[in-house]
Image (tube, rainbow, N blue to C red):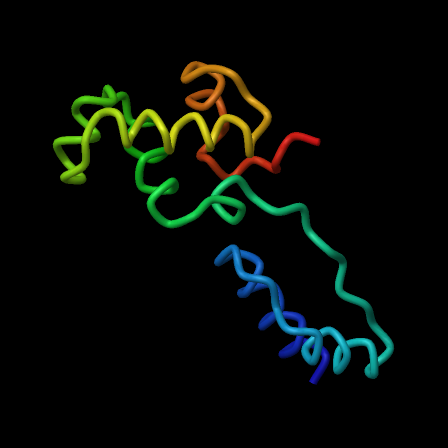
Length: 107
């Protein structure tokens, strides 16, 4: 039972989702605890922000991102500035350096 609960919790964490308290409670009832993981970059972003970040990380300019997502370049800039604030970074270069965008959020 413990092995199955642990694998389910790990699967949720790999998907960037937080497993419910019931899963941790059941695992705790078996005598084991599940450790908390730091949220990944993508877990703290909204879906549109995630799309923009992935395109920017692939090397697209704001204008290219805007054309691909049917947005204005100004809207892309707005979302990107909000991403910078959320992640505590200040440039596209820092954004691109986040390994696979699966790095933990800077404290």
